[in-house]
Image 1: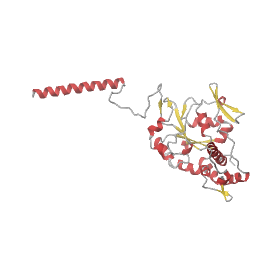
Image 2: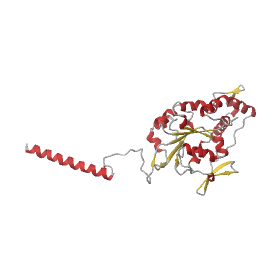
Image 3: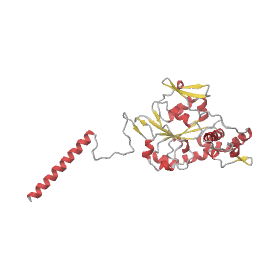
Image 4: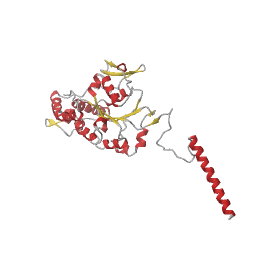
Length: 305
């Protein structure tokens, strides 16, 4: 009986010692040597952390997404992912999980907004639901331009990439037209059917959570479009007209901040591939009905061909 009491007291002392150690660790905030931290959560840098985006530029491809991202980055409360992540539209990336996605984001303070842009999200069928699952409150920006001009720009980029790799590519008119009529199976054409893609996003997100940016207006005069984007993102007004100047050599606006200027890379403003006037008119005519449907969906119209 005596030995049983002594053993019970010994166990009680050991438990009390362990409890005291745990309480000291909790008060000091230091982890137990046996605890493990997530490998996907990098150590903070000066109080910053990598956070999931609070806003995503979802498209459109060749609509001005890079320009919009760089211009938003002028705001001191905005940090942007430098590369297109393609998390929600590439299966290999998506199956790596949100910890991998977070690791692609910049380090930010709690008061800053993380912005990611991948224009491929807009036309990806699974992207809307996946983005919603990540964050139902995320704010979405969609920058659009004349869909006919966008098709030509899309082709021009693919052509440039093919020629750089010394690979042949069909002329635009051969891809765009079949027996004198518009080829509806041409992928670049399908990407310009904005109403089809937007309808999928509106099945998941409310309309007021998607801000539409006029890409053509952004090129002509960036400041008014940036002010609208600031308001949509609930950011204090920090971007000013003095942040932009027109570069006559490049033919578009560049950015100026803290005495340093920055222009988009040489691929922006690249001359379009040739397309006959007649073929372009056919392209404009093809988009009339889709454009009208898109205007009705967003509650505004655009000066497109």
